[in-house]
Length: 140
Image 1: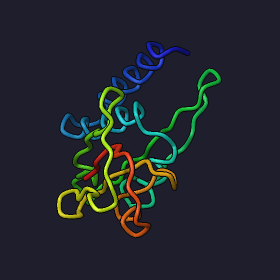
Image 2: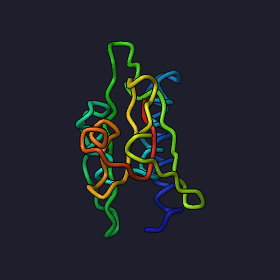
Image 3: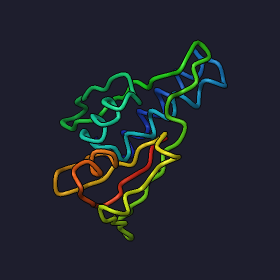
Image 4: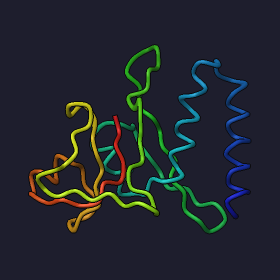
């Protein structure tokens, strides 16, 4: 399965879901579909540990593994826990921070995910370990 076929499957699933849910909730489901593009399994484990998602599972489609995320919501009105996600390092511009310049996301209400010599960890864990690294993304 190539990228185009995967994208077609995702949009097909989204269109099926759209008929079953209200329009104002549709964006919450699409957010989960968008995540698959740049989250690896370790980043997903961090999101689960930090309480941003309910669960995740690996699915096998045509000999390739993909992650399926179950988003977490605040209450009956289904307000998603994740209100924003920003990719920081990009292939053309890597952003590195030292241990004394670790990012603070919305006064520590969010997290930054870093790639360090100790693996992929959050900004708070990096501060405890006293290490810096490449800033992958902010989640709040």
